[in-house]
Amino acid sequence: MRSNGFGRGGFLGAIGIVASIALLAFAPGALAGTGGAPTPTSAPPPPGSASGAPSAAPSAGALSLAGAETKPRKSFYFGVRYPRLTYTLASNQPQNDIRIDVVNASGEIVRTFYREDVAPNVPYNLRWDATTGEGKPARNGRYSFRISPQTPAAPAARKASTTAALSLAFTLYGYTFPILGAHDYGGAMGRFGAPRSGHTHQGQDVMASCGTPLVAARGGLVQYSRYDDAGGNYVVIDGKGTPNDFVYMHLAEPSPLKEGETVRTGQPIGIVGDTGDAQGCHLHFEIWGSPGWYEGGSPFDPLLELQKWDRYS
Ligand SMILES: [Zn+2]
Image (cartoon, rainbow, N blue to C red; front, side, top):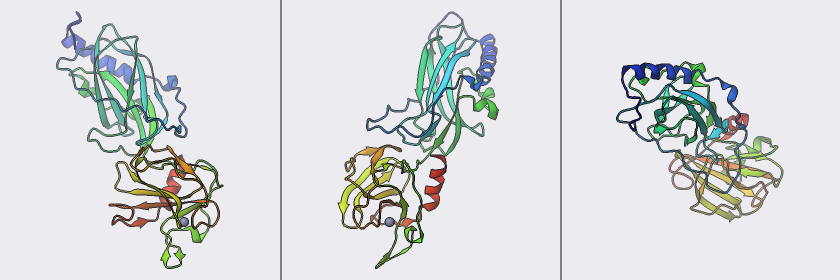
């Protein structure tokens, strides 16, 4: 905070509470986000914003929001596009110490950002990397950004009503469906555990036309990007923020991903094919528990997960 001539104390504290209420009551009409599927891109996304630290002597004027919106309306953990808040304050002070909370649908704060000396009538951006204050992936659900003054009185106003908390709302998911196109789950032989000669099927087959784009259901580290006679062109991704590995097989062409590369949730990983030991065009998809694919972990049935991602992606 800087000296600004307006001083501090009980008077401003009272204004702070009023301002907080005014900000919470911000109507959702100004929301113009597009949402939808993640935008495939090979460029790494901008990093999440730093948390900042509370001001030692917080001060803010009578605040209101001149404008604010959140984009996109649907985001994915470690995804191509983080939830991004753009906000413009109105204030009778030239510099304002504010906090921006990420609030879940129950009104609980999952992450807080502190900003000092925020000027009125200037647009600011904030990107949330979808991690909690403890650095863990936030859960699936509805969230909202909430802007309020960094005044000592602010904690009393933290517990927002659900309606208010959704005023700059967006939805966050941990995974996206990996096939960008028409698909079906095929028959019994495509199920996890179906008999194969000498072993059982370790994943779920999802039928789709050859050439249909594939994206990473969960981003992370590309552990393998190779070819073998059984899996054809295949990719193994060590999922970020999860102990699980994700395996994609029978790609029509070698994946553009390189081993050791970081891939984002929703980023293109190749196209559906029938390379290797495949009957028709399909994605063979596996999920392996810790410590991972042929590293001592075991595969488990991914069908329920796939169907869940399929519903909201
Ligand atoms: Zn298969």
